[in-house]
Amino acid sequence: MPKITGGKAHAARLKFMVSAEAQRQVGAALFAGGDLVKDEAQGSITRGSAGGQKGGKHQHVRSLPGQPPNEEFGGLRRDIENVQLELLRVEVSSNAPYAAALEFGTSKMAERPYMRPAVAATRDAVTELVRRAVAHIAKGGKVTG
Image (tube, rainbow, N blue to C red; front, side, top):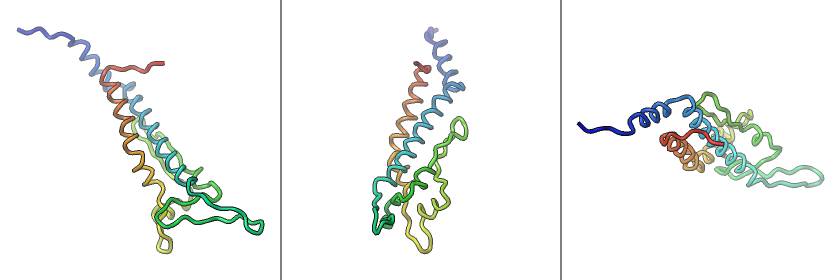
């Protein structure tokens, strides 16, 4: 009969993979991914901002339909948040009262999306963060430092 070696180490690694610590590590990767989405959405709002003064008054330049909204006073950018709702559940939301109207448009205004493009732009990076966390856990990796 063949002798199995490393069985105890493998069993310990499998047990760790479903532990609270392993879930915490994946949750931390998800939260870091949420921050990437948040930063991308906020950046898309400020990148296209244009404005100035005319006759001593602030002049806002609207973004083109289909482009992210241009920042006017900063409320939309400031109201984007990343929240860890549960250990393995993160929500990035835009909470300004007019956020949905800008993202999806209205019957009288074309959409100026910024959240959906942020998710699309960061999808690969977020996936890689989670993949690395899972790979680290699969190798029996504990948190260091």
